Structures are given as C-alpha cells and as structure tokens.
Amino acid sequence: GLGDWPKATLRERRKQNQGAKPLIGDFEQAQLWQVWQRTCSRGLICK
Image 1 (cartoon, helix red, strand yellow):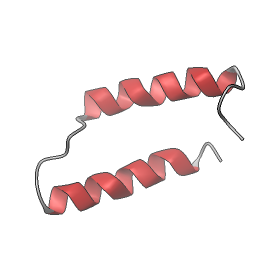
Image 2 (cartoon, helix red, strand yellow):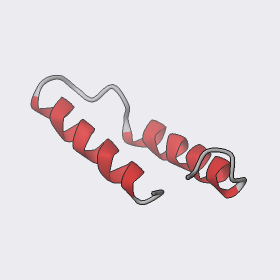
Image 3 (cartoon, one colour):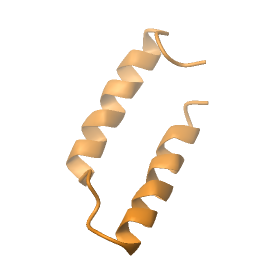
Image 4 (cartoon, one colour):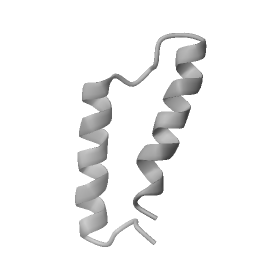
C-alpha cells in the first residue's frame, strides 16, 4: 500500500547511514514522495 513506501525508504536510508552517506537527501526524498503521491492520485501506479 501507499503507507509502506516511506517506511521502506526510511529503512533503506538507515542501512545506508550505517555505511556511507545516503545517496538521497531529505529534499530529494521529499520531491520523490510528492511525485509518487501525484502519480498515485491519478491511479497510475498504486495497487
């Protein structure tokens, strides 16, 4: 579901933080999330 996406991303970021600096910053992640929400609201991806 839609709610699973950010949690999975946060888990990945925590894994990355244990090693190197995260590849995606907070600003980029926020933009990506906004795009995901817009796409989902159109019913194109979400299932």
